[in-house]
Image (cartoon, rainbow, N blue to C red; front, side, top):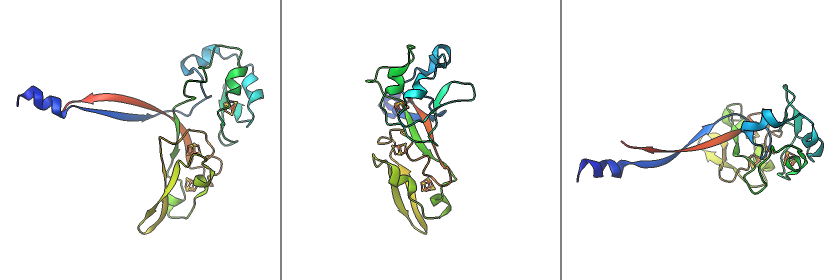
Length: 170
Ligand code: SF4
Ligand code: SF4
Ligand code: SF4
């Protein structure tokens, strides 16, 4: 077997996840957001769960401490600017992330987040010598944020997850 064949056999395609910022609005064109948004407030008025609030800079953004996104698209439909992607596109690539403040991670029984998750993306794994630990199925999580406000220690944040594919040769 030649060196090139060995290298080829070791070449792997893998996916790396980059966790970045929290999402601002579903379907929004993030790169053009601050250029195109006039802060007119139409999206804020239309959101049925009232989770869109003005941020410190005046630009609207979702606040999951208030409630969840139902992905109704009314914010996007109400916006007079060409600021949103079509509804056929993914709303965002945001997922729930459970941070260290989680009670279960401190061995205190809690399953509040799991009870709030409609797509059953949160499961609890039994652990030896510890209470059951929450685990998030990234494929099932929609980033709706319903688990955020119910967490008694505010341990859950919704973060953009960018997936990068890379070829690695050993
Ligand atoms: S998609 Fe609907 S629920 Fe979600 S932020 Fe927009 S208006 Fe609110
Ligand atoms: S609700 Fe919060 S504290 Fe309770 S298990 Fe879920 S992440 Fe942990
Ligand atoms: S963000 Fe929504 S779908 Fe994802 S784990 Fe929380 S409740 Fe479930």
